[in-house]
Length: 234
Image (cartoon, rainbow, N blue to C red; front, side, top):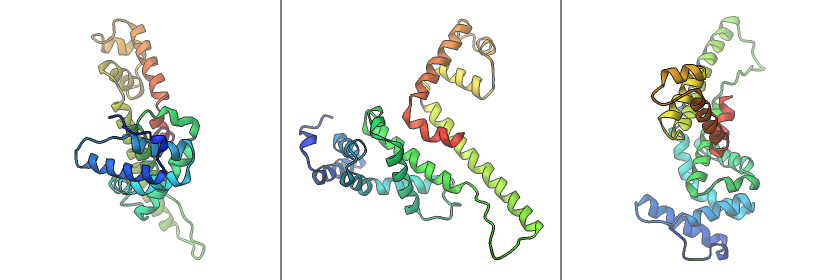
């Protein structure tokens, strides 16, 4: 839906108010205009307007808190929800520079990126930290138990990261051909010739496999919403 007013003429206060109204309409399943919230993001991230950033924080803090609480690594993190909410907004502020803003065409893309920032904040914190207490020397048995616990925790967290990463990848694959190429190449470690033989109904020859693989990889590499998860996965 197109906004009937000149968004650039609105004050930050007015823009924040309209963003809140439109968001409420969205949650009530009524027709809404995302342009006001997108403009608030634009002023905060592209123009680096501090008041616009504060408006975004107030508007989306409850939404980000919900993402944090539902993340599988949050219950064992041992930190308050608000801590991760703050880290998520900080990540977005620092990672999404003005030069990168034009890559986000709409409000949905921006909120997806903010959600990735929230998940990344939890994952970063939840990675096991091997702490050595200054006032005691743990015995060998204690150290061995801690190491075993840390290894198990690391495995669970890494699995969650990988699941998030591949779930996001799968959402961006256009058809069965792309799914076959990505799954075969990066999960089954199949060569193009092997892929063509297994999925002969999808690929006429090996060149089809190469073309499909090149196209999907180029598209995924340009996707700004994958940047944070890709960094965590590495």
